[in-house]
Length: 112
Length: 111
Image 1 (cartoon, one colour):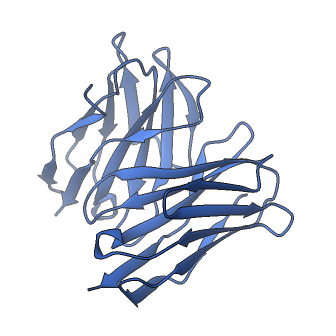
Image 2 (tube, each protein chain N blue to C red):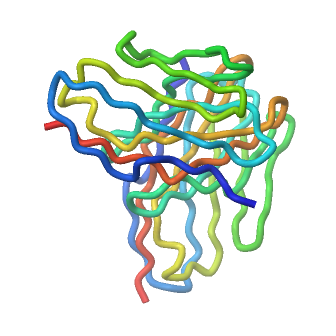
C-alpha cells in the first residue's frame, strides 16, 4: 500500500514565475491538506480539499490556489513567486472523519 | 488564535538517557493533540495522538501526556537511542480548525 506521494522532489524557480506541485493521497483517503514549512519552523496550514472543493484555508494570499481531482489527487499552485515562498511543501491525507493525517515526503521549492 | 510553543528548541543527550520534550498551547479548548517526528528534509511521521478526553498515550518507549487546563503536553522518550535523533513537532487541533504546529525540538542522541 503506497503512502502519500508528492512530485517533484525538488524544484528551483525564479521570482515572478508560477509553480504547480502534485500530491497523491494514501489509498482510501479522500481529504488532502497542504502545508508550508519554512526552514527551522513548524508546518503552516495552507488549505484543505474534500470532494473537489476547498473546505478550509489558512492565512495565505490568493496567489496560493489548489485543486482536487475525482481520484482525490491534488495540486498546489503558486503564482507570482516571491523569495519568501522558498520552503518545504507538505501534503497530508486522511479519511474524512479520522483524526490521523499521513504526510508525504514533501517538495522542496527554492525561489531565486 | 491558537499558538503553540515547544521547549527546548534543541536538545543533545547521551544514548540511554530518558528525556522529556515540552509543548505549550494558548487555547485549551482543543479537540486533540498529536506528536510527530521529522527527519531532516523529510515528511512527518505520526507518533502519538491524544484526544481531548484522554490524559496520556503510550507507544513503545514513547509516552505523551496532556493537561488541557494548563495548556501543556509532554513527550517522554525512555532509553534514548541514536535512531531517535530527529525533530519532534507538536500539533494542536481545535474544533472545526486544522492543525497548528509548534516550531519543533531538534533532538540529537549521541552514541
